[in-house]
Length: 117
Image (cartoon, rainbow, N blue to C red; front, side, top):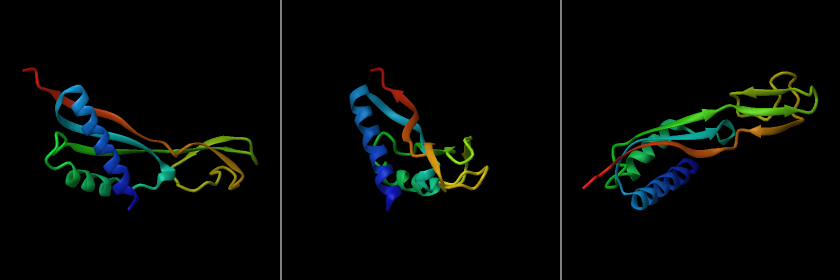
């Protein structure tokens, strides 16, 4: 399951950051993913809720921002964006394209608490 491995990686990264920075609670997690990754945001949120149990991220709101695919078309010479996960120019229908963006995946934002003891 592709979503599980990516979500587990996000969780592991967050746990490492919590240990290093002294964060006591993670309230919100937002990840950014390119449309070519074909992710299911609801499934990832469900997985995160399960694997974050017993960690500082337990109960955190998990969201995925799907970014459009940006293509350079060699047939019509235009740069265009599409929400479709296909590598086809939405302007002329050509598959002779170069992907400028759409494969990215990153933790975009975290909302955390720090214990000031």
